[in-house]
Image (tube, rainbow, N blue to C red; front, side):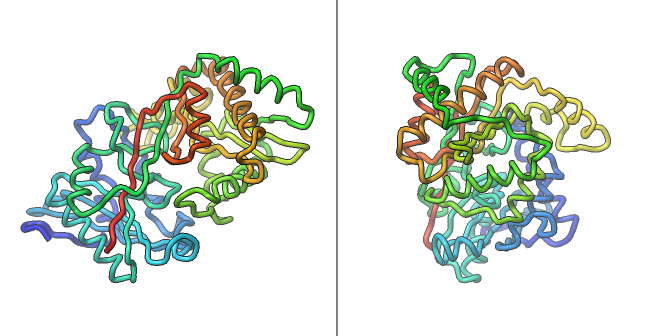
Length: 379
């Protein structure tokens, strides 16, 4: 542990508040940073609110120097990972620091906790699960992150590698000018799909939101099941995700594809809520909530984001999978341009070696705008 640095576990409400609030000190001069909603961060950390804690446990620390907070970190163990991915694999995340000395001490504390709890390998940063904000931003610092994506200081890359970590996987996001028509070859593929009586696309129905959110998230569990790092959402997490997403779901931005009446693909698109909350400074009360509700009545954001998209595993690798994906992309693209005046969309994140999704993004005319990296180390 570095001289002059005190690493102590978070204990009590005051420490939890300090843990959440610390990012304002880190990024106060960064024009690309978007202040998160503090209530959302507190909910992420709280076992009473976040159903991830039904199969995982976490510890949080603060770093202090001369009585001032200079960093924070978490460490997590997910029991589903122990069974389904790799026994002995733990994570750390929610990492922020003002200098390299604090960073080294925080990472060392997280590693020791993982060792003490029987872990032999660490991946990070992952905050708190692969479904939250995985990876460290290493490209695209100058552009504000879209909703549900992270933003980090460039120095973190060097500090993490200095602690003995190496790349295990990159996660990519792609920017697309959605005002442009898709290339003619894709247009013909879409037109053929529209003539196929077996295929139908429909909007999500918010009057049946519990049903449709379960359809989407169960399709997600199926479609992503072979992906690196995949941990299936539990029933409690599916219900929680549906409840959280509902206020920012717009029916014509989320579509389900059916084949012979069976749901087989989906695309979930969100307005860039970061544009709507940026001036709230993380606070919904006393007036932030009313402002956000008003803005969400019919959002006018410059960008939209596709955080989740999937095709049933039984169709993957075939022509139909690509056809369904492009049909979903084009129909939602048109809706967003015509009804919401959106100019750009972001796909992702996408695993760097997921050739199917990378090809779909590139054939749609999208270009990489952010790269996030997950690191690993043997403990």
